[in-house]
Structures are given as structure tokens and as C-alpha cells.
Length: 165
Picture 1 (tube, helix red, strand yellow):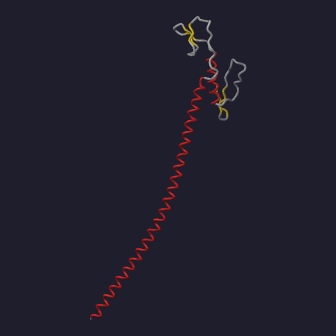
Picture 2 (cartoon, one colour):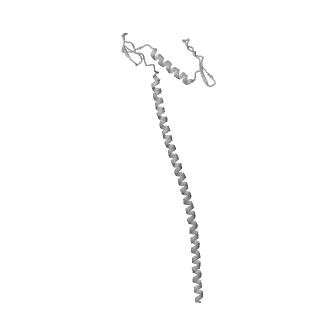
């Protein structure tokens, strides 16, 4: 029977083992790990199963011919079956995280370089705008001088014509 209590599940089970307290709040992740451990210990404690070929097996670890009682089954590893998988998963996750951090560092370096280039480009843009404004001002001054010179030339030409009359 499961009951909900403040966001945690409380598992109440009957147990034939008096040393197990089942009226304890156990978070779901810990409960899952305990089940994995209990499954592993059951695998270590279960007697070998008989196969249809007449051989007995201790669940895939060793094959012993049926009726041969002189050979003892070597004890299985004290590690849980999932330990190797978990170590490999942790190793893979560590490698992935390391790669992510390395790529993140490179991305930050590229971003800093791009920001520096952008600042330099904006500075160059401001310089070019100032140069363009100066050239436009100089152009308008030159146009004014040209217009003035044309007027003077016209005035001089007009004066010369008037003297001829």
C-alpha cells in the first residue's frame, strides 16, 4: 500500500524479516537503488537453476553439470551488477560535460573576439563618418568658391564688354 505524505511516497509493506523497518519514508530514488541492491543479493543467494539440458546454472555466471557436487560455485562479485554500468555512465557524462565546457570556453573566446571586432568596426565606422562629413563640407566650400570664381569671371567679362561700348 502506498500513501502520499508531503510530496514523498511512504511505502508500507509487510516483511518476513524482523530486522527490516518498513514504516520509514524512503525517497523514490533511494527506494529504486535499494531494489537494485536487493535484486543483486537475491541473484547471489539463489541456488543454481536446472536447465533443460540437465546442466545447472547460477544465472549465467557458471555452468556446472547436473549431479556434480564436488565443484563449488565461486562467489559472485560483491559489486552490484549495475555498478559497472553506473561507472561507465558517470565516465561518459563526465566526458560529455568536459566537452561541453570546452566548447563553451571556445564559444566565449569567439564571442569576445567578435565583440572586439565589432567595437573596432564601430570605431572605424565613426572615423569614416567624420571623414565623409569633412569631405562633404570641403566639397560645398569648393562649390561655393567655384561659383564665386565663375561670377567673378562673368563680372570681369561683363566689365570688358562694357568698356568696348
